[in-house]
Image (cartoon, rainbow, N blue to C red):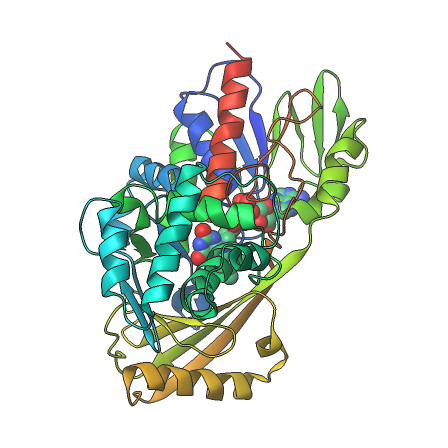
Length: 429
Ligand SMILES: Cc1cc2nc3c(=O)[nH]c(=O)nc-3n(C[C@H](O)[C@H](O)[C@H](O)COP(=O)(O)OP(=O)(O)OC[C@H]3O[C@@H](n4cnc5c(N)ncnc54)[C@H](O)[C@@H]3O)c2cc1C
């Protein structure tokens, strides 16, 4: 055991990517860690699901090269070999943007010039917007709806429909009219306006469980920590100088609550001072993500592993030959009329859209629809998000919803977990 002898473990409530990132960081620094996960498996909203013996993801996830903390964590865990990295390529019916392997910002300039489906006025408007934002270090004087912001910046409708809108919905999981312009600009800053490799698309080539949770749990255990699944923490209460974790036999001086924010009221309600935290989270609203998994008897010939299918809700299809030779995931972000469709109607619509992109499809063997109703918080303007350090000494919050530049993403979750670990480590020196 590498943990410091006699020290009470840091308790982590929640084994999603935020809690696991925190656990790995603390364990690597030699602190004893005890992580509790209510579900039977780790991973939270980015987890492995069993589909009749085939491991799939609860929802297709996409990363970008700018996910520095996530990629560095995977480097530490030795799972980066499960990633496929490609220069950004957006293929949607009637639109193609492909960034060449040139230094930034030349890659974006050349990519825009050579793009298909945009008029010259669209391309110039896109370049003008990036220039405007760079001049202001991507900070807007005030936050507003991304749709209003883009109109005020005189971004043509075709450009918004083909480029800005799909990026916004995919990254913020919030329709462009309701999305935060500032967070949208943060995404542009860290992807399109960063270093060349920041805009790379990073796709998982193994199920999400292998990508992080399995390896993170093994890492924590290897350092003498404990990871318990199927163990729900009912609530936190004051226990002497620290906290008692109801539902477990653990007392801890430091607790990192790394659950979905909707769980905070139940967990914190008896703690004096918790109202200040709950005030900041009770205005959060949620957006869903739907993933339709399709299994064909042969591989579907994708010209690029990720294809926009067009259509109202801008679905994206991913070939997932890594999980099964004939597997395809179609992911649809945010709320919309697609959620009201029957499974059969949804299937018919998306099969037709997929065939429109890749040609006649092989024989369909099966399908599975997974809807995550509270996939992410609605990333609206001027959202109040709580900090990782709370007003209650010893209590920390990790999760994609905590204060930060990012929308609800794996990177936001991992950053928050790492930050909580750093705060705890700093408090001990
Ligand atoms: C379908 C889908 C697609 C997505 N696509 C992308 C994408 O393409 N790119 C991207 O970057 N992000 C994407 N996201 C967002 C990303 O998955 C989340 O931002 C991230 O997983 C959130 O991690 P977290 O650790 O903050 O929270 P969670 O994953 O919600 O983890 C919280 C954990 O706490 C546990 N828990 C709750 N209460 C208790 C309790 N009382 N005791 C013990 N344990 C408890 C839960 O079971 C859960 O495992 C997607 C999300 C979904 C759902």
